[in-house]
Amino acid sequence: MSVHLADIDAYFAWLRDRTKLRNLPDGWTEITTPYLDRHNDYIQIYGRRQGDLIELTDDGNTITDLETSGCDVKAGKRRLLLDGATKGHGVEVKGRELLVKADDRTFALKAHSLVQSILQVNDLFYTARPHVASLFLEDVTEWLNERNVRYSPRVKLAGKSGFDHYFDFIIPQSRQASERLLSAVNRPNRQAAGNFIFSWVDIRDSRPSKTEAIAIINDHDSAGASEYVSAIAQYDIVALPWSKREEFAGRLIA
Image (cartoon, rainbow, N blue to C red; front, side, top):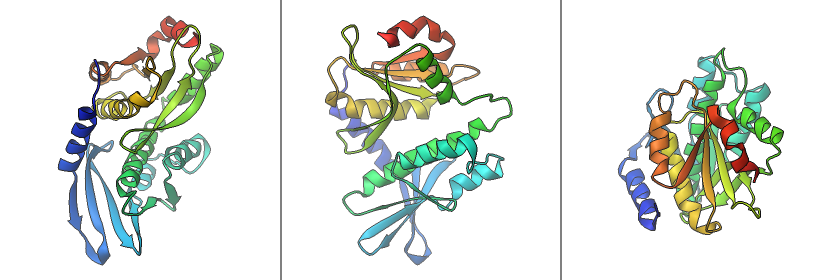
């Protein structure tokens, strides 16, 4: 299925129509986005103009919620994941706050980056469960290394929209196969599918013509996996279930 600029326009229309603003005291504006956190509540960020700049913050809600739930993100592996989920998006961690600064030209880009960072930090909760022996991204990385797959980790690609998009791995083109962009999806659900679809649609035309977008999905005990696979398939994104990784290893090694 081919994709068009209309797909991006539809995404922006959805984002615009479902974003709500409310004025607060001291010059702050509450921005309610259509993205959902792990409680299925709409993610809210707050903005205030400071001279020529606009400060955007989550008011500390994301990290505070994780800590209240017993997920310490300030040490160990989770600290590294927190850094990756924030610094990669240009987001600063100040105390418990996640924040960025923008001007009028970069406001939409910075707000998008902050929300995407909040979504990633939110997912750190799922590394706090007692039965989680390791982190899914680490598992995928270790498996790729064991299979001698050539890749570069954590790549940032700019899209038509001006937004930056992050993929966990890029496998360069070879004589046998085209370029492949991989993301390790720990929680395959509708929102995760929408994020991947938008990233792929937005950057697709800037990549070599036969580039593949691939989601390696954690299909263990995930009710949303089938819905996720069905959604991304409409945009020529390949879903590779983790439980069948040995069956598709050759596809990534080529």
